[in-house]
Length: 131
Image 1 (tube, one colour):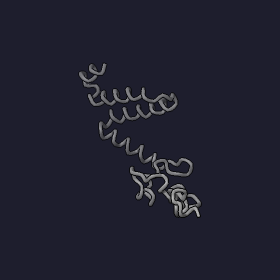
Image 2 (spheres, one colour):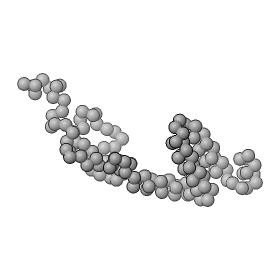
Image 3 (tube, one colour):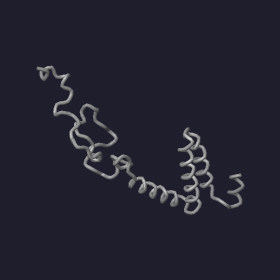
Image 4 (cartoon, rainbow, N blue to C red):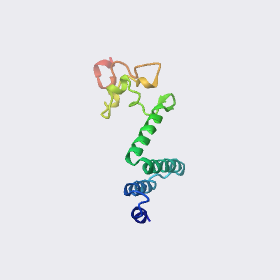
C-alpha cells in the first residue's frame, strides 16, 4: 500500500518511513493509556511531516519541548534539572557525584534547608569523629 502511494506521487517516501517507525515504536509501550496519548502525538507528527516534511517534524518537536518546558510537576519544572537553567543545573550534568558526596539539595526544589547533610558526611567512616 505504501509503495502504491509513493508510485502514485500521493505521499513522499520519507512519510512512509516516519509512519513505519511510529507504528513499530507503538508496540514498545505496554500501558494502554500512555499508548493512546502517544497515538495522538503520532498522528500530529504524521500530519506535520505531510505538510512540511522534516521542517514540520522539527517545528513540532520544538513546540513540544517549549510546552514541556512550561509544565510543572509537584512545583518543579517538568524538564528539571536541565530546563530552566539554574545553579544546580550548571554544576550537575549527566556525570553525577556519588550520593554521599552531594551535600546541597537541588535549588529547583525550593526546599527550606539548602544542605541535605552535615558538613562532614559519613561520620561513621572516620573513627576520630566518633569520640
